[in-house]
Image (cartoon, rainbow, N blue to C red; front, top):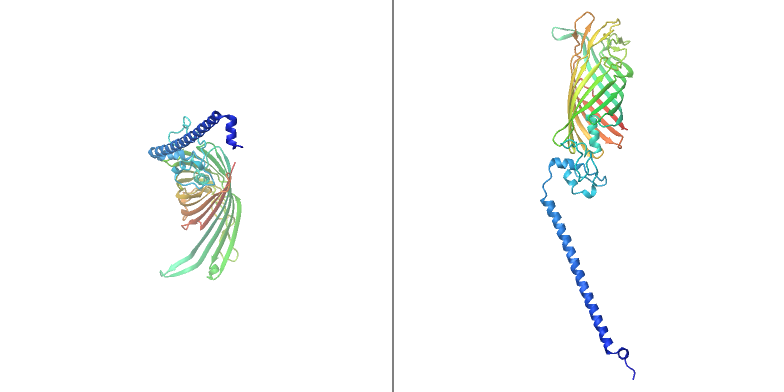
Length: 445
């Protein structure tokens, strides 16, 4: 009778061999169970270690000493913002968003290393963390510093509109005016092209030179010509030419930090390269019967040498920038071969009135490359005096002026080397222009 396969195998190998195989198989199974249990314990221990490490890091972050404001200012510049990620205005968030702000070397220091030996003890604010918009506003108000050359093209338009009533006669019986009454109106437009070259000699010194070119047109209107109140007559005079060339420099007395503003001292010299306004003859307009006289030409310069000195201050209060300035203008007396409008030459000396100007404003950085600004400026001009040959000094009535403007501006960084600066000024006094528009485009090299 045939047996089963196991019986046949037992018969062939014998009972002892079959028993050893079973024992070995049981030992292998036992070892596999122990290995699985050991691996499970290892996985649990690794998970526990990771959990403890995470808790330790959190506790160290919570127990860490708070970062001081000055330290935040210094550390703020150690990260370069990712332009694709929105950046909060609070500088302390720079430590939380480290994955979006890779560490870079800034101002001679690297994250985790001490600053360069010999650097200023107090950290500066403008060097490490200044957006392009803030840089443009700072350069606009304080000047351009650093070893770089820039060319600035300026375009300006100014409009004046002045109307006045002229009375030529006398008052009879305190109620009746006998004479000629005329209503005169002068509308003037000035277009200016003002290229300026700037060079930053160092982080503290900057030099510049400006060569303006002007085109002026004035429209003179008069009513009541020839005694007829309804009759109007007008005449337009235009002129163009080189303006007064000027050179200047700015020196940074104090650089902005967390606790102090940026302070810059500036000085400027002006040369009378433009056409001066003295000795210009007045021409009677035909058919005006002597009621309207206009100048033969228009001036493009002041005619005298001048110098100015000013002090400007700026403080960054992210995202706002506050600035102010004061300037004193001095004009040097100068002699001319003819100083009046009569046909014959009348030599004399002219002392154009000095002026004092002050102003202030603020700017807001809208984003990395644009900002808006609002400012106020006022200039007080003293009375001009003249002295005819062999005579004493005498003041020119009405030559003093009070010029006040409210300025609204916007700045756009078109690229890292080109910026568009726009400004609109609105006159607040009778001596001020009704409107002043300026566009400037600095090109950095």
